[in-house]
Amino acid sequence: MVGVREMDVLLLGASGRIGHRIADELLARGHRVTGVSRSGEIADGNDSDFVAVAGDATDAGDVAKLATGHDAIASALGPGDDADPDVLTTMVRAVTEGARRAGVARLVWTGGAGGLEVESGTRLIETEDFPEEWKPVASAAIDALDVLREADDLDWTYLAPAALIEPGERTGEYRTAEGELVTDEGGESYITMEDFAVALADELEDPQGIHTYLATGY
Ligand SMILES: NC(=O)c1ccc[n+]([C@@H]2O[C@H](COP(=O)([O-])OP(=O)(O)OC[C@H]3O[C@@H](n4cnc5c(N)ncnc54)[C@H](OP(=O)(O)O)[C@@H]3O)[C@@H](O)[C@H]2O)c1
Image (cartoon, rainbow, N blue to C red; front, side):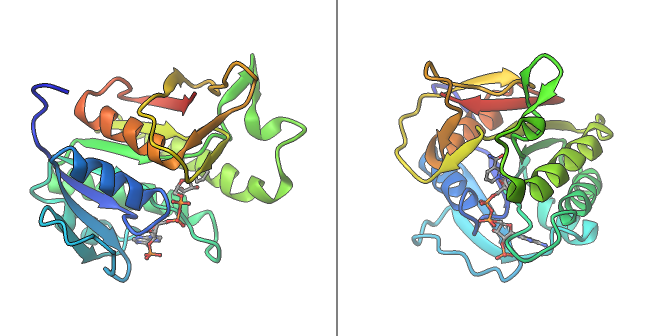
């Protein structure tokens, strides 16, 4: 995009499957990225605009310290396979409080698709085919959105992947919808992690969904 200002972005969860693709996308656009994980060990391809740091996203003090001086915070935090999914709500509380203390207003959160409506009044998580094993994390991600909704003093966006998100091609094409699952012509809800990273970087550069549960897909 012409005329986009370079940003300093604090990226929480930069070592994750989605997070490292967001880092790549932001760096390719000329932004500077501070990538956070608990260990601080993040493969960065030796990009001089990338700094890897250790931090705990459940600790508001850590987040405040790390976020200071950045233009925006992006999250691709997840509970991982072992942790209690409810840690997501602890993370939202710590990140929003840390953002306030650091004076950083803009926050784009990688959320879940489970709370999106598929038809009037029905959420994806309530549909018959929704896999049982995804329910705990999907439910925790809905709770995390409820916590974020209490933080309207911040310019938050809760950006949801499609029902299915996998590594794949970067096409640069995607669609968004407010609160509704995005499906393609065949009724499938899908996005690659690469195109989700495009959507997140676009949202940081040109906000379209402040205080919004924004869904992505093809
Ligand atoms: N269809 C959907 O709705 C859908 C599908 C997939 C994913 N998602 C959501 O997208 C998000 C990212 O998914 P993913 O698969 O990329 O997750 P992931 O690969 O498990 O990555 C999670 C990231 O969070 C970091 N992290 C975890 N706890 C932390 C803490 N206390 N402090 C700092 N960093 C911490 C991890 O780093 P360390 O472990 O190194 O600290 C890692 O970088 C998740 O919230 C997930 O629920 C939604």
